[in-house]
Amino acid sequence: GENVEQHPSTLSVQEGDSAVIKCTYSDSASNYFPWYKQELGKRPQLIIDIRSNVGEKKDQRIAVTLNKTAKHFSLHITETQPEDSAVYFCAARYTGNQFYFGTGTSLTVIP
Amino acid sequence: DVKVTQSSRYLVKRTGEKVFLECVQDMDHENMFWYRQDPGLGLRLIYFSYDVKMKEKGDIPEGYSVSREKKERFSLILESASTNQTSMYLCASSLKFGYTFGSGTRLTVV
Image (cartoon, rainbow over all chains, first blue to last red; front, side, top):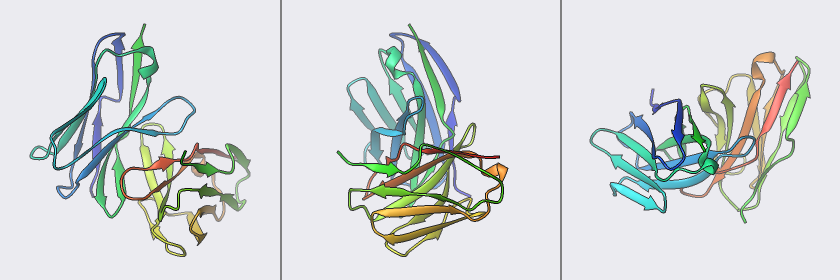
């Protein structure tokens, strides 16, 4: 069936460094790709999204890139801060308003 | 601010009990979803609903049922709770793009 693969499952970076999380999807019809951040004990929250008609979107320190040909998209966080530590989930919309989610990346920013 | 509210933050139930998890949204969203979240497995879709009284099975519907009698409320029912249903349950709603999630219900079945 359709799925989303997410890598890495854990990521540790020094404060100020960049972090990159990658996802691949299998449904070529997917046209919307959100990213969620889930802090410990809290709900996942949408932090950035990208639609299939653009290749890159940026919002301050976070950016998302999309390669539709290769069917992969990535989250980039620059100048990481301790408050960026969380679990990040990627998702791909595959039909109607249903999403497949990646298995999550636990990001730790070391002060 | 938009809100999705799940009635319980933590629940402990016994094996064989019937369990109701409630979710209410105040955004007039048509689409509502129930996921369970387990370490290493991410979020898996149990059931979803696009309209009142409408329901569709997700990827892991076995052992669950749902009810949507009103637009703002989507209930997840565990007909006979089992220990393998111990998990974090997340409700979400959406209009068109992206989800708004509830805070989650951590259910433990003993």
